[in-house]
Length: 79
Image 1 (tube, helix red, strand yellow):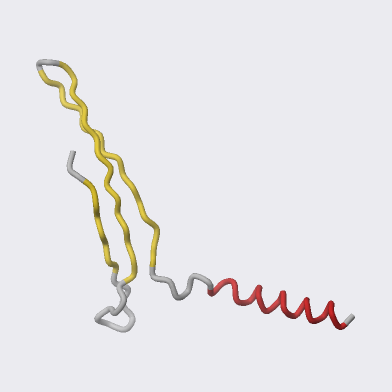
Image 2: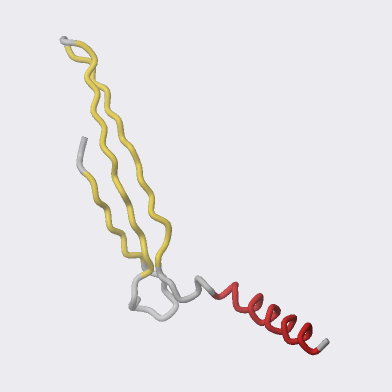
C-alpha cells in the first residue's frame, strides 16, 4: 500500500511539472515557404521557384521588461 501511494505521489508531481517544460525555451516554430513564379515569354511559359526559411525566437534581453521582442532569421534565395 505504501508503494502505491509513493508511486501515485511521484506521478502527480511529474504531471504538475509537465506544463512548464517549454517555459524556459525561447524558440518558436520554423516556417518554410515555396514561392513559384510563372512568366509567359515568346518561347513559352517559364517557371522558377525557391524555398525561404523563416526562423523566429524570443529575444534574450528585450529593452523593456514586459516586451516580447522577436529575433527573425530569413534564409533562402530570390526566385
